[in-house]
Image (cartoon, rainbow, N blue to C red):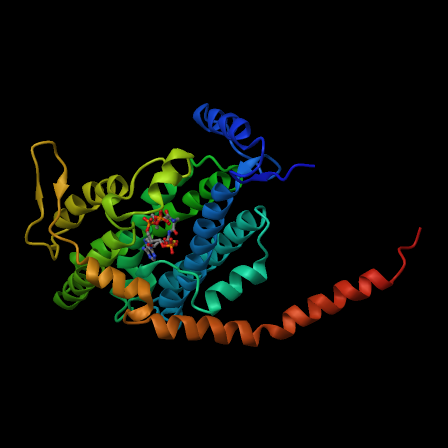
Length: 322
Ligand code: 3HC
């Protein structure tokens, strides 16, 4: 039985690759049991597992504020959002598992520091206004990226994105409402909101990935229909939506070069890619704390895994009553 993950040394590789690429061109979804190039599988495991890690690590910055929410309403909204992120992580780990990688392998890659997660979650949430700003900017950027991925050629990932985007719009709306309220609120609220926008604007642009010219994975991901838009295109969509709305709220943006060109696109100043690379390499403001928190959670959850394994082993021993 030929492997469903083909490599260039396989005798029928070229013929099967042509058929696979024709399917992608026709807009067909590639499903778990279908033939696919091993490189396509490897890239998807990399991208989907890192996306899942991002969702779970992303719970930490906001989760830190659940106990300090200023009202019951805001507390309930934040609890719902953080719970959603946990669920997004589960969808995505499951989607990655359809490609033959185990949950344990993915978790060990994260806990060992080998696997990446989104740079954006390595920044601290210093005030309550950060919570609204994360909803507006970070979930806003995520929606642009994930709406793009909803068109992805791999069926399980594409379907996970459709489900996740529906929940992200709630995350985005609640954040935007909060920041716009503060922008029209007391001087202290306005100052808190402005401070948060100043700290999160550039990291939100960076989270959408390096410039296309510096994006080694994009070529293959675009050729095989995983990415349907480039990093820079998604970034431009994000800026075109959010820059005018933030300025209309009466707040400013920390980019003196920001302007709208004749085509209506909002052009930004230079992004600090040295900062991006440092954060991705593990030298961001909160990388150490985020990884330690995940390692601690994994250690404290050992008893659940052991109980599940014992139960599964016991079930195997007990003959099924016929
Ligand atoms: N943070 C960390 N690493 C990043 C990164 C970021 N923001 N952007 C790029 N990188 C890494 C890539 O992982 C890659 O490294 P690797 O080969 O070792 O994995 C390297 O930088 C080169 O970048 P590429 O552009 O070639 O990488 P990709 O083609 O993977 O593009 C991406 C980057 C656009 C982020 C793409 O991976 C992607 O779309 N991922 C799925 C979406 C995702 O992961 N979003 C993260 C946020 S989750 C979220 O927003 C939750 C929401 O509820 C708030």
